[in-house]
Length: 116
Image (cartoon, rainbow, N blue to C red):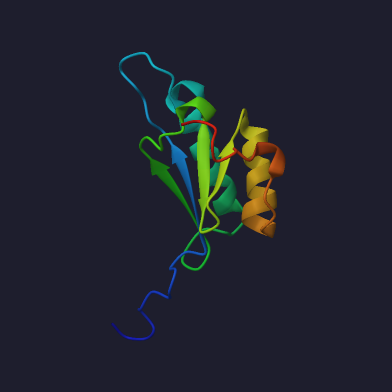
């Protein structure tokens, strides 16, 4: 690869993964709690804010993240910060605070032991 086409280390500055898992056995899952809408809203907000693309933020879909009891959940890397959210205003706060300014939204943060 040439220097101009080579991906920089850590191609994206941040990834946010949304669990979109749906369980067919009736057990609780993120898909039952508006996870798809939250994912789409976050992706739209990130793009509108000019945060999408190489060196910036990538909004990703995920299968089961194994945190169902805390769901719906999203996780931001490289920080490894887990969030539980209720509505789209929570997603707005995560975008505006964490993805734009790098400040963790403590009120939405999921403790590591919750959801296992």
